[in-house]
View 1: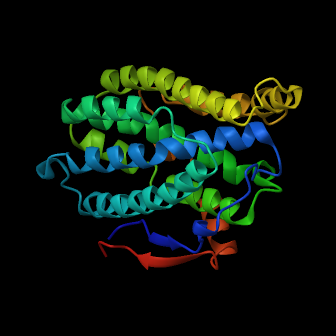
View 2: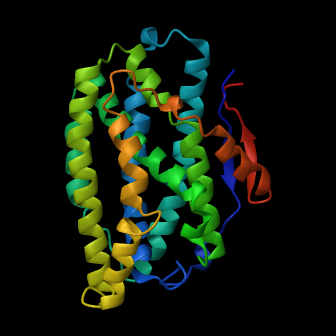
Length: 274
């Protein structure tokens, strides 16, 4: 039986949301929007990579069930972020990196299965680190639009819940340390470069690139007390250990706390593989 639960989020983004939805903070809004823009293509790639693993490699029935629910959760994330991104486009924020990412995803699709899984493991580690940050630092979304605050927290909780699935599939498929780390280093460069470029484009569209307040917020976001750099550095380097496994950092209590306190914001579809 799977340890995951597929949930439907109770938000309606068709009503729109404020242009600077993170409490008026232009930089942090632009950064979070840049992340959202990449998610539909990225999450479909994650789904395709775990589905590409040979069935005979996944002998553990629990892992096999978790793969099905991983797909269900990622499909839900993809759908909600498609709605989110459609509203961004209406506001005048196009996803300028989309064509580049589509080409990259198509190249990844042609790689051997273990390489595709190693890339997914690397990206899942980044989403898990960011998810932990969002739930551990509720002040990050303080003052944010209520619907988007719920969306990001829900997404973060489920990213933590399934953070080890792709990794366990990779190992079950015979993936080793060297391949995992080399792809992680490659992914680290492309992920942060793409996100930074899209954030900059969002700021440019908002005519906020040359505002002092923009870069004051950026400096505080990354290097201030509790900033992203200090929070992501240790777990980011931890991935390089030969003994690394996502659940070495057991933050299930963190995600469970949010789910229990906010059970009115989602509806459990249940385990699709129960």
